Length: 250
Image (cartoon, rainbow, N blue to C red; front, side, top):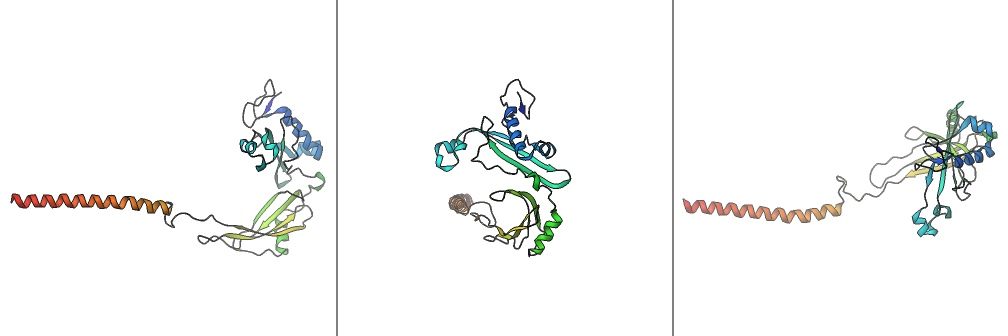
């Protein structure tokens, strides 16, 4: 057997952190093929050797099992595939799922990105998505709209377009950037949802003109000032003694 991402090996052992045993790859391939068919898989889906990786047990979850899913306590493989359609260049998605060390899909980890071949015409391109967003009432905003074609996880489980504007930008400490967006089914053109987005900057713990924390700045001043005062006193004292000596000698 061999490993993906390396030369073929005589056994089925991975010799690099992201090298996946070929038996795991084959079972993962067959899982996707069972959903999309061999022809569709061969044309549009390919394993991503850089993103697919072996994941060791999570020591924190082992010590705190209530903090995460049970499968994280055991080793597993994160399998990542690219989904691209050359005839539709905007189709550039990722398929992700997890398998155990026997190559069985882990149901606790959501399977993401496997398309339904009967719903892959994707007649809605970027220009049409923008037109639909305008008709849905998306305001022009203060910056160019941002578009994205991607997998919509959760209950819907399909590929969508999102088109979003920008209505505000950061203008100082305590202010956030934000705007609105529209999610559009990439097959039907249906508006799935209207949403709002925002980015709240982290609270600053530094002075506006420095990266030094204010408390540290005050501590530095408190330490340095007495030293400067003492050094100045010593200089003045020496100068006075020198002056007195010069007067006596004269």
